[in-house]
Length: 216
Image 1 (cartoon, rainbow, N blue to C red):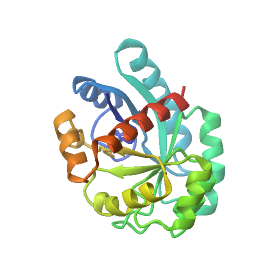
Image 2 (cartoon, rainbow, N blue to C red):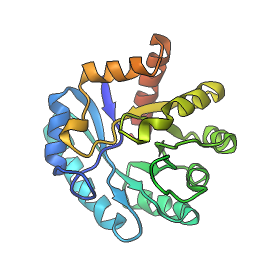
Image 3 (cartoon, one colour):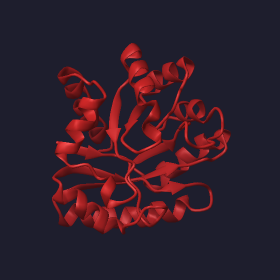
């Protein structure tokens, strides 16, 4: 089964309406997809309410499970905990945090404050340290292996830490356009290129199912 828990639409910097994005995933036989548009204090309430509506419609009328989420992006680290709490109150089923990717000037300590706040996925976390990893283990946070250019530079480091500490990882596209959506063949090539074994692949797929169940 194919899953993608990190995608973007015109509600942030993606190219497609939510319905079209989800239709393209459905055509590639994905089981579940989360819409996680970029947000901060200026727009998160509007984005969540809008995505909730369309995800309910698509899940009811099609074969794909559409998950309403949010990706808090470049917010001051000490604000993350309050934003996470408020987003869950508004109905967001999945909280992604824009981690300290090596290709953007994300505020220092974003990773640590994010995992401590109990986010669901730490996206493209870059060269995160052991303190943050240990906190993520305690909080049940998933680390992202990203197929997006630039963000993927630190995948080897993330995978190594996940292996050493038993931290669950998920593979996401961070899709902004149709060309970012991996079909099954591309997904398998991406996994093979990372040196992920068949056993590890089974664990990653199990992680994705577990995350989906967590969201109900």
